[in-house]
Length: 484
Ligand SMILES: Cc1cc2nc3c(=O)[nH]c(=O)nc-3n(C[C@H](O)[C@H](O)[C@H](O)COP(=O)(O)OP(=O)(O)OC[C@H]3O[C@@H](n4cnc5c(N)ncnc54)[C@H](O)[C@@H]3O)c2cc1C
Image (cartoon, protein in one colour):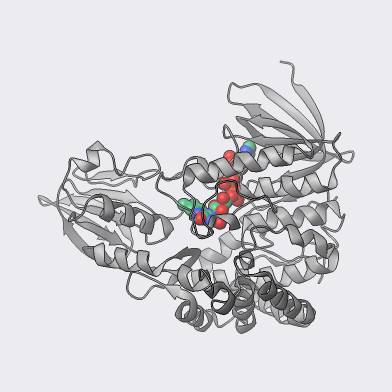
């Protein structure tokens, strides 16, 4: 069988937020006659937003979710939380804007099976949905499969008397759910769980909606983090200032103390004693509505649902059980992020290939990784900047509590190195920087503070990250073969 060979200057795998940000940056360095090949196994751009549950909304104000500095065309007010279709429309718009600057060849419906590097070229082997094969030869490769979010399936449960569903492929507001009055058990207390509870209590007032919340999750308090109107000038605090304080408080050993401080000052929650954080935000109004609308909350994890001695019961991971009504709905809202996948360094030995994914994370969010590491790639500094990489998947398994403080330390440490290696004006395009919520004078003060102190503080962050590596035996440090 003949295999097509496509030649390009840059290949980007993944048209989610990470890939589109990488593409935005690439378009700043390439000329109009150079070509970027964009490959994604999905049918269009948008990544996980294409198949997540329909009532999802951005948890941050919409203008702060973008590629580079590309502006939204929605015409909504500043605090608007975009829905799924609006987010997907913005992805399309971003791609159109970028295509005015650089030639982009799109290969949607193509899956990358492997790649290697020989003779200063990256060779990427792909196959299409209809089993055609293709090899792409690129001077540079950006592997932006990012957080690799895939839809959740229903939980596999032993009971034949409950209906196990996932919000990703089951219409929670459809006829089947509407025509039943059986209780609903939402499993998972993160963003999907909260969005699902909120949608259900509004759609079916008076229905029994229960939550199995695991160790409980707290959220950034959106009202406090994004004050509106004139308060943008006087209250709230810039996101980089908060994350800097978290990272300065954290020394690699005191995650519970730092987590408590962060949650108390900037958090909101709907369940008792929330132990986890996953980076999402929620308003106080949502938080109170959810807490008031829930019939029952179990602070435990579902191990199975069993039919025993004529009864149906949830078996929790703790060993406790709870009898439930036959016919109950069990809704899988357990997490999507930080799934296992093979390790790959964030930059290859040649510095020609970069990889944006959580096993060698360089920043907390994949958008930041897509943007900043692509700048380093084109500046030929990707290896010499000596960024630290951190295996978020492994650290999360070993300590959920340390994960987010560690990500803040990583972000602060690596941002300091980026600033030393990339022209400052490149960073003016960081349209998804949450600080942009606030007026320019406030941002300028924060930037000046950061610039004055970042090298000195970098030493603290490095020690924190080194402590984490020793303590949890996780991959955390400069690329193999490099020392800091
Ligand atoms: C339910 C949910 C809600 C969220 N809400 C928010 C929010 O409100 N705000 C926010 O900032 N973040 C949110 N996030 C985090 C979110 O995941 C990121 O914002 C972002 O959209 C992820 O982008 P990504 O590019 O890292 O990954 P993805 O969106 O997963 O994109 C990766 C792309 O790579 C493609 N790909 C992977 N491997 C291959 C391969 N081998 N060949 C070809 N293509 C491949 C995939 O098909 C996919 O399109 C949310 C996450 C979840 C799960």
